[in-house]
Image (tube, rainbow, N blue to C red; front, side, top):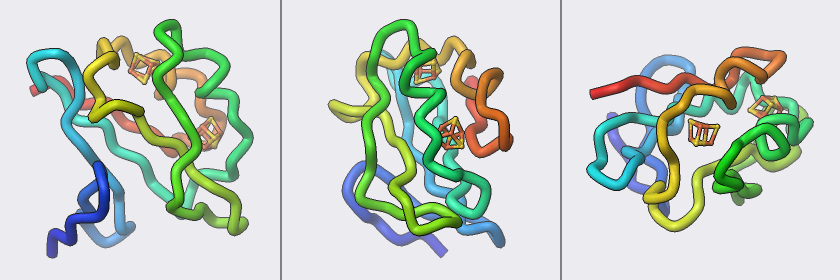
Length: 94
Ligand code: SF4
Ligand code: SF4
């Protein structure tokens, strides 16, 4: 089931949120709300400062994160995925 909601779509049994990112839309950014505790570490670590708080809520009722501006600034470097302590982000190159 795909349900359009702002920049994010939903997919899979864990209700993963995802959107395509990059200047050429060459990657997918997945966010798993059931794993995100809203710590904000990924926001701090993103080298291009493109992660912002979302209106979607995570496991503790706090906002999850999403790439701003339709994901255009995201370089799909994968640092947010690497630093997330709860494996709540997955970057998939297309
Ligand atoms: S995605 Fe990970 S690092 Fe980012 S706010 Fe959620 S739990 Fe923290
Ligand atoms: S993949 Fe890299 S550029 Fe994109 S949001 Fe994550 S840390 Fe930022």
